Image 1 (spheres, rainbow, N blue to C red):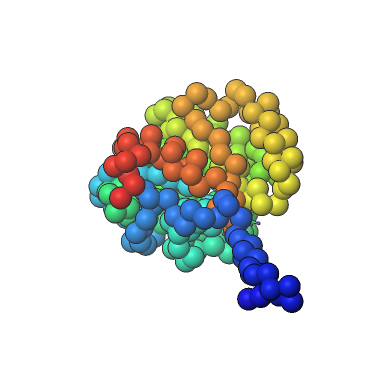
Image 2 (cartoon, rainbow, N blue to C red):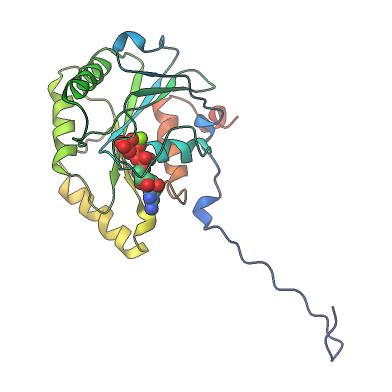
Length: 234
Ligand SMILES: Nc1nc2c(ncn2[C@@H]2O[C@H](COP(=O)(O)OP(=O)(O)OP(=O)(O)O)[C@@H](O)[C@H]2O)c(=O)[nH]1
Ligand SMILES: [Mg+2]
């Protein structure tokens, strides 16, 4: 197009509508994940097929949303505004073998007592017996950091006496913070949890809404799944 002085006017380049962090649509390790089954008893767990990654955390912290975001799917795991939505252990097989496991959230009391006991039972058995478990993603709301419930959960795992799995501390919902608040939150997390986060663990600032932190998660999972980035990038 020419303007009145016969100078070519280029249309302005369209502004990117997505933040840079949202451009990774899924992480390669979780691509092609599908739902297989929900279980409430240890006997129902599928046969171990390879290294398994479980997602735990307070009710409503965003476990299901994080699984969906990392897998690049909107409805793989069932996310909801209603806390306590995930009520079973949900198994999602990965293409390369192994499973993602979405665990019920802790800290939501509006559930029948005996059912809660069943879940505690099966989760305990899961942590005790599941040989394939190679790492645990502990999903936190970054604005709250670790709560008493999270600390109890980690202490409970330590108390099982089978060795705590490696933990990826996922500081979720970071889209709700500004850049400087994120920096503060990360530093505060390190200071507050210095003794609980051990050297095999990782900490990632994350948003299941924007995709912030997906690359860092992918790097961590490569280590857990014992793959070079090249072999995982199929
Ligand atoms: N802003 C924002 N909201 C999020 C994020 N992740 C999850 N949410 C919201 O938090 C609520 C709970 O998300 P879920 O993924 O269902 O949480 P959950 O941990 O699986 O919950 P339970 O299954 O009940 O234990 C939903 O309304 C999500 O949209 C995030 O990164 N940013
Ligand atoms: Mg859930």
